[in-house]
View 1: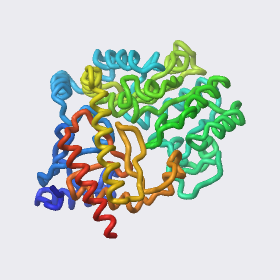
View 2: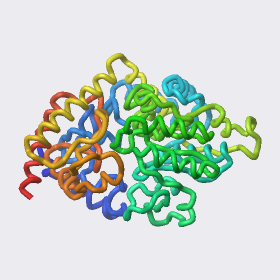
View 3: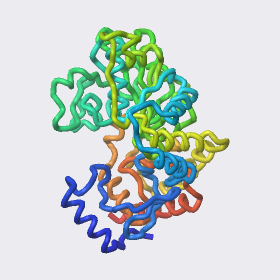
View 4: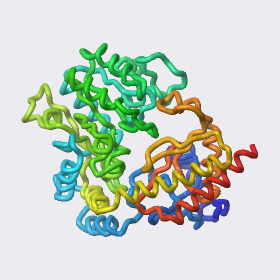
Length: 429
């Protein structure tokens, strides 16, 4: 199966997209494919081509597209109204579920996107500590906010702890408010925390940074150093929350932060994210609890809206069933095993990096433990591979494969065969 056949309908939509959208897209993916629908672990475009989907809407569709329990819950809620700007039962019950699953989540506050969730987590840390600077890690992605888009993909590798803005339009003054550390280097991180302890409001980290699992002792050292100096540790679990385990990466790696940003899975494919954390910090959202000086403002028109909340609840109800995570991890391991066989058999100078629920092929040899190791990889070859996979009926992110509960053995077999064919094509030059 290839995606070469393009219908008149899809061709017209592609032309229209270039007329009304900057770059002809939403800014998310480099492909011009127009998706019509998703079912289980597959997508179908407007031309009727079917793809095995390892993008999963950039992660939210962990239980698969159009899961019947999620669809039923959303349809029932739509008939009752879309949003109210009031408390609603589904969002309260979802917060209770999150609080019961995620160890640090004594209280929960909703947002509509992961960018907002990390933004407010950092704001809370500043309010709580009454300090301004945040430490993050080179290559760590925490959304599209000005403070977050620092040294995610630096054009030039600078000296730590200097931050570099990743986008036009970010005030240069903000680079001085972020302290950048190397991921997976516990000594360097600990040294920077001690050096800046009187300035730091918080430390934010993806417990599994993009694809990079933490080295043994790294998260433990972050936890001990931040605790010693009274600095809030924030886990960005937008991606890992409810994906690595029922309790997220903090359960999977057995490290409990002070706050977590959650998103993607908790909205079941609808716009919903959250900040969760210890009551001592979360109380800054309550004016009556902290007074005007400590009050942290946060509202959102669609935050905690009932459609997203019922979708999230239905998704989590699927995930809490016995054997769910075992299936997700088994799917991931099966695909990893197949791809590793292909890499070896084709003599490709590449390796898989990540954990079974999310990983990718990286065209580089040697240890891969931080952003600079990733930056050594052949990005052009990965881009060509992604295009070849698309032509062979497999969709993945630019730098990540997401595994779902809905992927079947047939989906995985097709993906392995597509990788084998695509890698062979790459070797031809």
